Image (tube, rainbow, N blue to C red; front, side, top):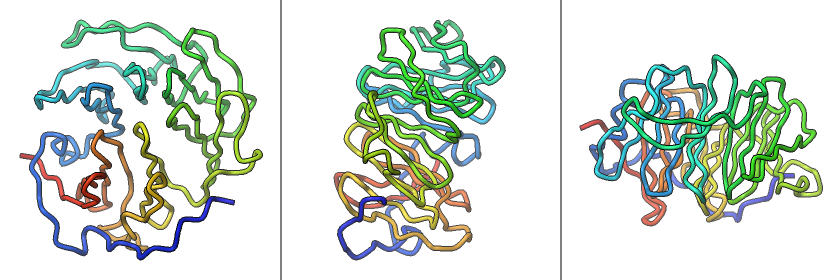
Length: 264
């Protein structure tokens, strides 16, 4: 069974309370409904995969840099230790790594030829979820190993641990074996967001938990209304939560407070 959280009062959902509003560039593609995924670079920048397959980097000076325009990218992942950026070419299914360059001159190297749906990276390791639902792992030296896991629907990685989902249940793999005696590590999971030491979980009822801090950070609405959380994304200072109505919230992990984000 999933580990139980300490009994603490659940916080109100952000939309039901008065919160400061911050104008930031990271909100711009969200406001246009274009974001599919976010990966956090080791230098503090945020890589954003847009709906059209483009990859942009929002640098710390808040300047958007085009990393890979015009390519049909289906997923991205950023290693929380090395800062390496990986992508999946949705037209070929190849997993590739960014070797440098930007603004139309970026260089990429092929990491895996097996048709891949998703990638995850952490601690110098790369995980690939194949089109058929199998999971492969590399130790960063180019050697791939089949973990003999089937039927997976999603993968994430955090602190060198691979997480994979089937249905609403999530298992953990440390590169050698399944953890938690082979039983699911989490249940009732809609999504996971991970950055360095922080692991956030979006439950199927719309609530959000900080598993690292053992606390509920958003009680959720429990409904499918416009204020219901539909996705979470990691950023260096905390978490982004997107609602069904398109509102974007930022959870400041240090202050343990929510802010609504809007495009400037």
